[in-house]
Image 1 (cartoon, helix red, strand yellow):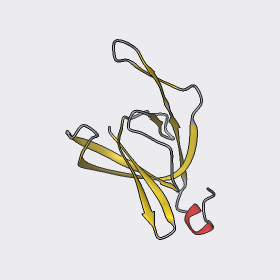
Image 2: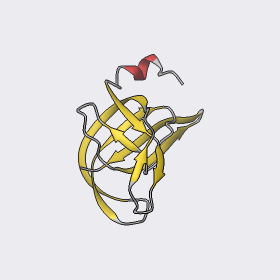
Image 3: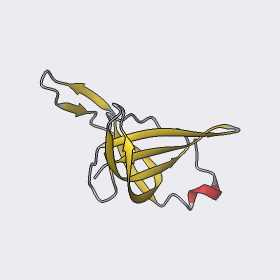
Image 4: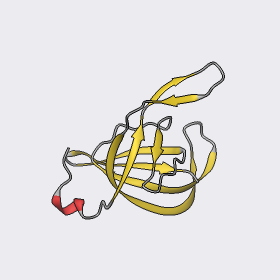
Length: 108
């Protein structure tokens, strides 16, 4: 899905998402070697959220991606500065035409 011209200017950053690949018997996660780049808007604000297991955790910010993004909380997110924070939440926001944007929350 291409970014509509009106929204494109509001998405100045790019994040890379690496899909979950495997987990070994010790619980160590590995990710795919190639990632998917998404144009987004990064919002930096700390807030308390509930993770996928229902625990309260501190979220450092959110990446707002135009359109639906294939992301799960087990995936690896790489920010423009090279940091790879944990993905805390993923939500797809809909409008009258369907999936409009995806919000990826991340920790510190």
